[in-house]
Amino acid sequence: MSILGSYQLPALVNEPFTSYGPGSPERAQLGNAVEELKKKSAVNIYPNVDGQDVHAGDQAQQTSPFDHKHVLTNYHLAGADLVQRAISSALEAKKSWSKSSLHDRAAIFYRAASLLQNEYRNEMMAATMLGQGKNPYQADIDCVAESIDFLKIFPTLAEQLYKAQPPFNSPGVWNRSECRPIDGFVYAISPFNFTALAVNLVLAPIIVGNVVIWKPSPGAILSSHLFNRIMIEAGLPAGVLQFLPGDAELVTDAVFANRNLGALHFTGSTHVFRSLWKKVGDKIDFWVSYPRLIGETSGKNFHLVHKTAKVRNAALKTIRAAFEYQGQKCSACSRVYVSKSVADEFIEILDVETGKLTMGDKLTDFCGPVINSAAFERVKKAIESAKNDSKTEILAGGECDDSVGYYIRPTILKTSDPNSEFLKSEIFGPVITIYVYEDSTWGPELFQLIDETSPFALSGAVFANDRTVVIQAAEELRFSAGNFYINDQCTGAMPGHQPFGGSRASGTNDKAGSITLLQRFVSPRTIKENFATIDDVRYPSNYE
Ligand SMILES: NC(=O)c1ccc[n+]([C@@H]2O[C@H](COP(=O)([O-])OP(=O)(O)OC[C@H]3O[C@@H](n4cnc5c(N)ncnc54)[C@H](O)[C@@H]3O)[C@@H](O)[C@H]2O)c1
Ligand SMILES: N[C@@H](CCC=O)C(=O)O
Image 1: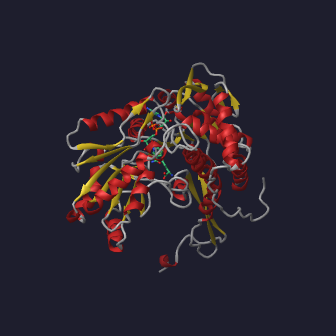
Image 2: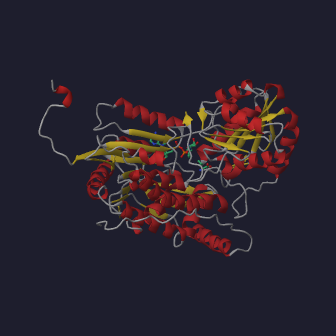
Image 3: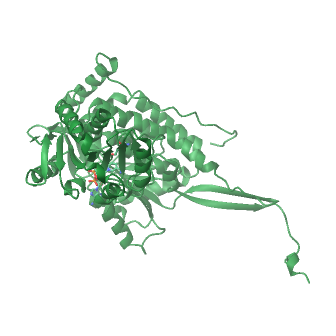
């Protein structure tokens, strides 16, 4: 549409969290939606290309981690030919999408936000809860609040990006800058654990005029499919977003067989991102341009508790950070360094309060299952190895039961070895490891230990009342975490509040839902227009 006005985008307002408290109408409505989904027979889901479902050949299933006999979806897998077709028509769709106005794109995003806020809220909540193993609170902050925030914030961020213009103009000259989408198409690969992260992965490129080939996670097919439907209903033109569930390697190899890859937008584990980086690097002469590689990956996030900390506050927030959503947040706290002077009190609170956490599939349960059998076996193996480690004791939890769902009790380990494997590697489950430090080691020795024990640098927190201590930790741990918290848990970053991402082995730190992320998806063009004419080739300095 022609723009015959200087439009202003609506002011940003965060989507509030819903309480789902006892007796609330929203709890009742959600309960109905969950029961309805439980009773429903498995939904057939297909790759969606140009807005149309494509009945592909092979199939797979998404089961509920609460009950692995409950098949939520039978989904069809995209083959290599379909991937090529999807890329070709996405590139065709890009011809008009890249020229559309930001306001028209924004209107689609706002419409999608409204659909998610209203018509689709409970369906999306049920899909995220049963599909990804979340309770109402964890699902709400993810598939409703954070997803809507992404839908609303991206147009505003794109507007800010577009507004950045060259500050200098010589007399008679007008310099302009335009944010073209990048060459080719964007390939987005999403993780299972956050519906909102899939939203971020596909929408960041789209708002600035790119087209996206999306391979959703097998652990989040239902919620991903629903989000794709919402975007279609909101008016996203056919071909701009191609939804391609399928075998991860097959789809990726088919995508990487096309020379027009403009960017990889990935969220998931470090080892997968590294393997993808290598594949792209190995074919550097093949690509039309230099594919941009954007990845937010794993973490080994810390809480550092000083002797001046409010101990109960630190312990309770540690429980939330470690065990909410069964520790399956990339930001989850998985190692705690606690001062010897307060360690007994801290551990006692941790132990007592963790023991009270309920686990199951009721709406009121605090903990649920881990996502699948592979995750269950991985976490169980880590707990087994803790049992056999002479320097590690299990203070709480450790019980694993996959008879119905993939349940693992929140587990607290304590190690006397500052270089323990349990302080280094990501387990990605409800397991936390405590290391008690001597108060005398506070300072460079302790900071170096925290900084260098693990290769990751995603999130971390310091708990202390003494301001000099807070300042010292914030300074000395500057490169140990991309998201740093003071007297708060190291999870729960919100778009527009605490843009999220980490460096080192944790990723390229482009920050989900931020202007720095959008910058990765534009290829600026500078335009200089000169209103003056010349009639002599020489400059004054050329005259004798
Ligand atoms: N830093 C962040 O913002 C962030 C956010 C969420 C999750 N994570 C990380 O993600 C991990 C958990 O998520 P996950 O289990 O979905 O991760 P994952 O790496 O197993 O899978 C992520 C995506 O990659 C795909 N994939 C897997 N193997 C592939 C291959 N060989 N080629 C191409 N694609 C492949 C999967 O199908 C999925 O879509 C954890 O390590 C967590 O820390 C990081
Ligand atoms: N924004 C979320 C990201 C979690 C990643 O899996 C958090 O900070 O907890």
